[in-house]
Image (cartoon, rainbow, N blue to C red; front, top):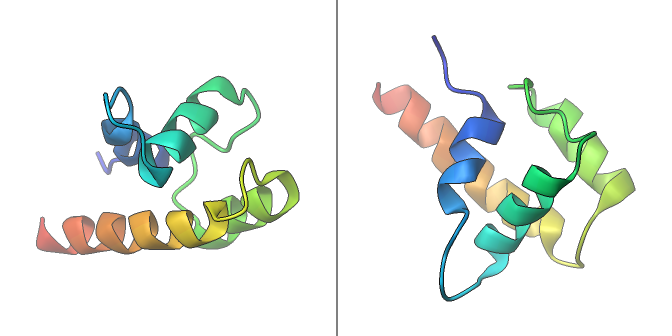
Length: 75
């Protein structure tokens, strides 16, 4: 079964030294409306555009999405 983006994002939670990646992961974890079961770039990106938790969240999402796609292709 393919890992959802949310599941991949959760690997960034719990860092002692916070960064944008871990901040986005923590926010998505606490946001009950985040599209947790989606693998759609457009759906998640649109959600973040309307509900961005911090100014660089979209850029952070794009970076993490690229890593997510790369890891999916490697498997």
